Image (cartoon, rainbow, N blue to C red):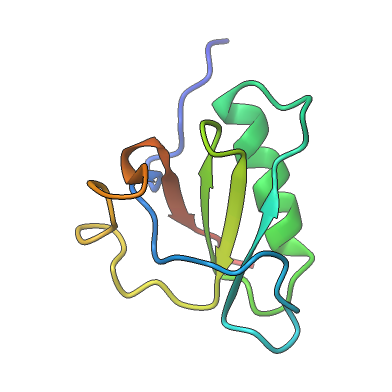
Length: 99
């Protein structure tokens, strides 16, 4: 069947993030998407798996264009006020992860 994004997936990102922050204590961080990931579905699954292994991750924002998977403890901007118009925000997809 064709890929259908989850209903919770919104356009934009929560906030800027530092690379690879310690997820056991930080409020946000990010990882580079591996080179083999070429589709939104793959990026979503990879980023969600990274979030699942991080106790403080409750939201993900990912972008194929920027090869980025960012995680957040909180995202008060979700969904209506996500960053969309600067820093490539329109290429990001964001969603909560309920663990």
